[in-house]
Amino acid sequence: MPMISWEGGKLTREQKKDLIRKFTEVAVEVTRVPAKFYSVVIREQQDENLGFAGETVEEIKEKMPKG
Image (cartoon, rainbow, N blue to C red; front, side):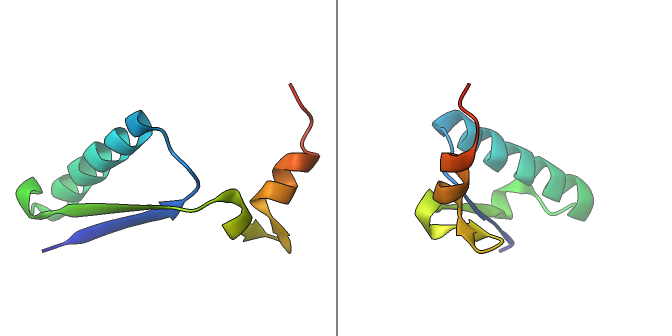
């Protein structure tokens, strides 16, 4: 069975539902494999567990202007 995996920051319940639906729709369109065979896994990471350019996302967000 095909599996689609997404890993990133926290998402809302609605965002997760949209990702699962849209990932599946596109995969079916491209591959012609029926939707019932796809599984989608969402792995959320906390901001302190993600980093870019030597800083955690938590640190980057702290430096961003408020408002």
